[in-house]
Amino acid sequence: MIPQTDAPDTQDSLSHLQALKEEHRQLDVQITALDAKPWLSPDDQIEMARLKKLKLRKKDEIFTICTSLGLEP
Image (cartoon, rainbow, N blue to C red; front, side, top):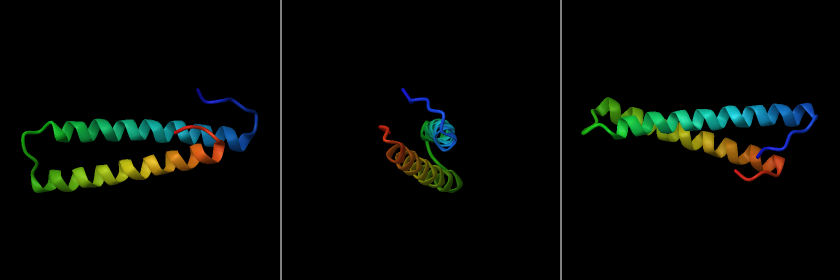
């Protein structure tokens, strides 16, 4: 559970954290959909790599925000 505080910076960070987590979940859905295909075209392979890199970037951002707020990722 994410603690609620009155500090505007903390509230902004928590809102941003929630948005990042949702984006991370959506990327996972897209990756799973591509992964379900029997084969990937060259364009699909490029898209898969792009999505995985973006998902990892979101995970890093989530970790950074959680660390700065003293939360567990």
